Length: 245
Image (cartoon, rainbow, N blue to C red; front, side, top):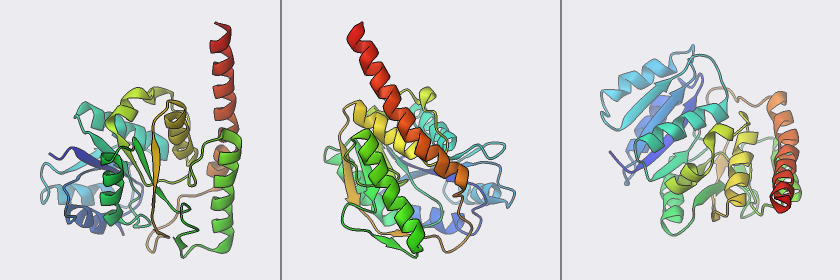
């Protein structure tokens, strides 16, 4: 068992999951891999089960019933990792929009002192491939909005390619992480920031998926917009309450 775990949440990723599993295990550094599948009707979970015979003790599968959201899948994975004493835990998409080779660089950032390492699309310009202009503007605008409201100086706060040192996940109250869509990514970074953890951004190139379908929808965007305001409000409320006690 490696002390590094990659968590990949899946829902209908049969076009990508086999290639992704093989790629992660071909890296020159050992990572274990946990797939959290939300009952994919396309058979994603069964494909992972078949691959477990090839990668015993390295490839793990947690199957849940129903599509319960990205955030709850990661929280499930975080708790699974903590129970098994992993020292470093990484989030990554199944669709190759995140290059698995960059796991090495995220780990190195954590190993050199970062508590949270963010695979950032915007730390050095805009490094996004195959996205239409309107989606780039939406993503970049969301990043600016998050920085403006929260005061958090992370250039890519909505990024989903992230590495955590174990201590971060132990300190944060995972049961109180409220958001389930992409606002989950903002919430995790913001609460890490408020807790005083060091966040480092590692420049990556984000490539839009070639196979399968995006899970982005209007409700996810709405959650992110209002969620940022809620996060900031809660921080100010607790700070005021603490000063009065």
